[in-house]
Image (cartoon, rainbow over all chains, first blue to last red; front, side, top):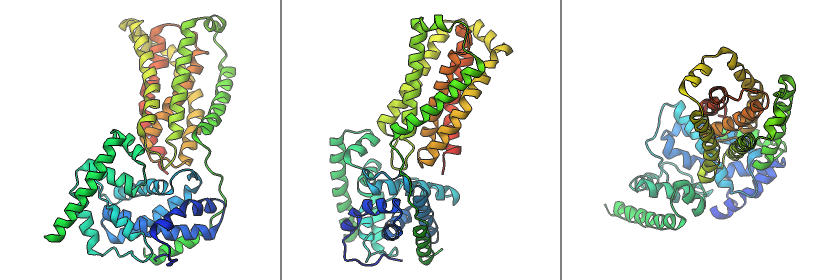
Length: 193
Length: 217
């Protein structure tokens, strides 16, 4: 089910999530339901390229929602909500992949995809653009792909990404810029082909 | 399962949205755990009794240095363990540095003991059944402290199980070893190496396995 169209943009919606989560922690069931509905399409878009089985994606989405429920006391209001959410989603995704006996050699994500699919009006996993974006991201070198995933999808800052990957912040910024340019070039080339 | 089931799940979860007590910051959780460890150590010391020469040992600079280093090893490992006890924390450089400080201190202590003794003495200690009672002390001090730290970390929904388990094990074993230094009067380097210090390295590594097995929530 897609969340109700409140007229908010994707970014406006995301900015409201920390406050909704705090209200949920305080016991506000209405805020909690709104939050869960708004994040569900994003979770589905995040998991789909990894699970690669539409029938199982909903199972894992529900696992993630339940895990969020179990761990909701661990969200710190001064920390980014999306990073917390994706931390849980990645954990449940790995569990699911072990369960299904399937491992992916490398993570495949698409930041533009999530931006597109997180809006309430756009959540159609069958779109051809999804596959195009996935293929484009796969063509990036691993380090560039990791940087794009960590900064655009998982919400890490450049400094945090630099620390995790073991590069200087300046180097990460340069690599990210190159990655976006290359992604654009790949998409244009694929579009022209 | 379908999106309709997901909507039903959301409805169920939102109806179950009782207020929760937010997880305290890592340093505060470390303090809480240390209070529990202090209780365990005091109980253990009361049960086993302090070593007869504790007064002399407290005036020995090397003994105090050793105790200080072991305490630092325990504190750094505990802080790393509790920092890793959250789903939105990456292992990162800082946590790795904390763990490596703890592990490094233990490697240093083991190497120091190794060079202060002879291989034959190490073999003798390893085969001396009466010296193995120190392992009982490790279990006495370590088990309750280990159960508490693992329970606290698991509740915080960690995602890096092996690292958190390693850090937790190093923290527990450090304070266990600290307690053991105040109950066991055997000053032979071979005994200390075989029955006090080397088990920390071995069991600390086993903490990675324990983390993967018991911290997954």
